[in-house]
Structures are given as C-alpha cells and as structure tokens.
Image (tube, rainbow, N blue to C red; front, side, top):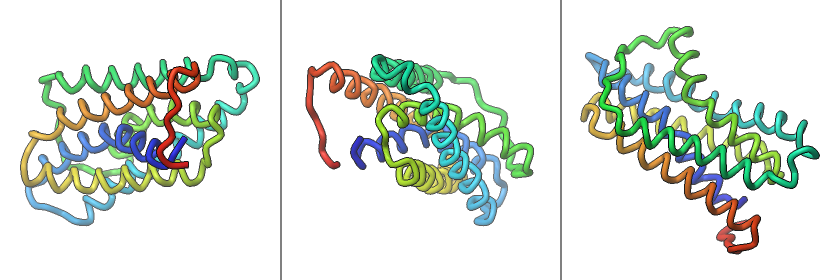
Length: 192
C-alpha cells in the first residue's frame, strides 16, 4: 500500500471520530482548548492502537487466509464503508454532552475505532509498515477530531452526516481497488 492509500484510509477511519467530535463541540457552552486536545488525543490514540492489535491478529492467521486476503480486505472495508454511509442518513440526534471523563471518552474512543481494528487485519496481509501506517492514521484522527470539536462549537451539526458519508465512500473505493489489483484487473500505485 502506498502512503496516499494509507492517508485515504486514515481519512476514512477518522470520520466517525470527527462526527463525534463535532457533537462534543456542539455541546460546549464555552470553547475549551484543553478539552479539544484531550478529545483529539483519545481518538487519535485509539485509532493508532486498533490497527496494531488488528495487525497482530491478522499475522496470527496469515497462512490460513493468504489466498483470500483481498476478499477479506474488500469485505471488511466495504462493510465498514456501507455502515458509515447508512449512518450518514440517520436523522437521529446523538446524545450530546461535553463531558470528557475517562469512562465517557474510553467508550467513545473504542466505539469509533473498531473499524480500525479490521483495517489492521488487512494491513497484516499486505505487510505494510505498521508503525508508520498506524501513526499516520492516529495523527490524522487527532487533527480531524480537534478540528471537529472547533467546527462543532462554531457551526453546529452541518458537517456530521457529510463526514460519515465521505469516509464511507473512501473506504469502499479502497476496498474495490485492493480487490481489483489482487485479481489482476488493474495495476495502480501512485506512491510506494
């Protein structure tokens, strides 16, 4: 996988955290930089850790699934992407509060990073540089989550559904690309 592909995956994975961060910003009566950074750190850290965990799970089963790894990557990324797209059309307003206690943030960070676990499994099949890839995803998530808090405070929930829609589409497209490359239909590498 190229750096561009890892970056696009990072953007796609960060959209759930971005959407929740927008909600956190919405619930703030007064903008708080410290809360913004803490929220960004929780989401960024978990988006870093989950691919690492997934990578080691994937390595454990590599011999068993090597012949179908492209189908696994396609399926996992597709399911995650479709779920995000479905959620983007959900009009239900999430429960909003600006609490950033450990329990609240731990739950939100895990919930928004489960899809990164699945991506980590696909990383194992493609032998990507785990430290660089996971760090890149974590940094992207930290930045977008911090921006999400600020945008939520300023502009409300105009961006939440659009972010999930775009993130879902990115993950589905990358899943298709992986499948088509491994089936020999296309050969496309921008940056190695």
